[in-house]
Amino acid sequence: MNTTLRHRIVWIGVIGLLGLGVAGCGVTGHLAATPAGSSTAGTSGGTRPSSSTTSSAPSSINSPPPSASNVTTASASTSMSPAASSSYTAVVTQALQWLEVRTHQPLGAPTWIPSASMASGQYISPTTNLSAQGWAILLHLTHHPYGVNNPAINQSPDTQNWVSWGLNVMTIGQLATNRLGLLEAYSQMGPSHPPVTQGTPQPVSLGTGINGSLYGNGTVVWHEGDWTLIVQGTGTNATSDVAGAKTLVAYLHTAYLPPYSGLVDVLQNTASVDWLQGSSLFSMMGGQEPALDVLHMAVSWRPLSSGRAH
Image (cartoon, rainbow, N blue to C red; front, side, top):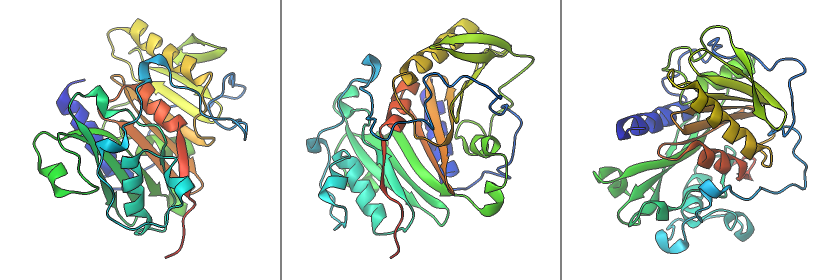
């Protein structure tokens, strides 16, 4: 994926996370609902054992998270417990601390994020966004370590967008719509794109007992538990698109996405992951990170709080 597209996708993601510029949020008709009797072998949502733990990262995403030496210490005081803050990397803790004293909305974050060591000589620096509809945390690659929301992060021409996630609080009217349509409307890769499923699909085996639908343009759609997953077709090489879907299926055979209704949307090897927990629609995406990284972030998701009054 070229740099321009990466950056555009990340910032579309921020707009979607904060409920801006997403008109209607209704059913777009791109995807079909989960068919009756669909396979749940290796399900990635809804049947997660309460005692289960996050699976180890596959070989393609085994870089360790950034060390505390890569980030500056948060300056704001915090009510986060040591146990809660120790679940996250230092840079993520900074961003959560900033948000916790400014919102009553539920907070959470992945406990695993791609390491800055994947980009030599760079650090991960956080910014946050907050609105009446929700919040977002964005991690950036920078040449110097900056504290949360340091103006230098966005002012530097060398800053690169890395990964992001956040929350949108849904209204009663939005929750009354088709859930898959709602998730698709908020997918950071969906609202500005034409229909991604074209023509009559053909069945395709994706491994581990999972069957999907292969469309003429190479798009692959399948269901696991309460989750719908889509690899958007390249239109030129359906074999590659199916291979990408099989890679995700193999990973999710031993890993658990959050146990809620959700949508994984893969476009040009990066992904957005959206799930609906009560009235909270959580979204995550990678601007420069491959789909497996983004899925592993979602698998490592841990809530910080269920929301609290100020």
